[in-house]
Amino acid sequence: MAAQTTPTHTSSPLDRHASPVADRGDRSGKATGALVVGIVGLLAAVLFAPLGWIFGIAAVLLGSVGRAETKHRGKVGHGQATAGWILGMVAFAIPTVLLFVGLALA
Image 1 (cartoon, rainbow, N blue to C red):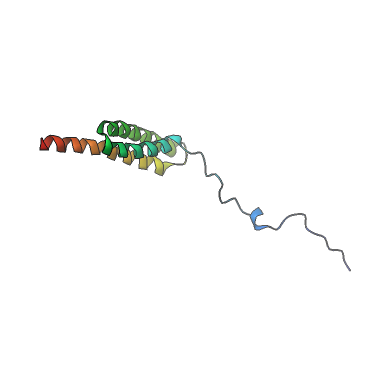
Image 2: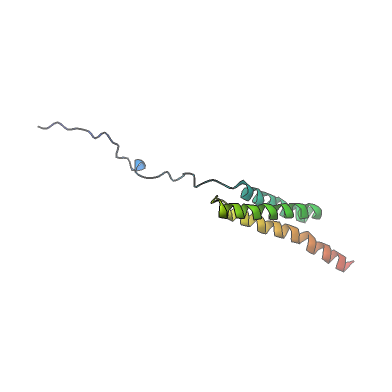
């Protein structure tokens, strides 16, 4: 009867695959900031128009820089930067439209 030897390596399927929660890359802080400022700007545009303009401009600037950063430096967050950029445009447009409507009705 031959002696059985146990293999020194493990046969777990987890050892053969990459982690499903592995980090995908360097994340752009400007993209995340653009999204947050865009959301806050959208709320501020409805509640208090001057804050909507300020946050809207900030979100558009952060979104533009974040989009360029993700495109040219290979960082993660292009969708966040684009969403923040769009929300910033809307946050700037809402008070502007409300101002013109108010002036037209006055």
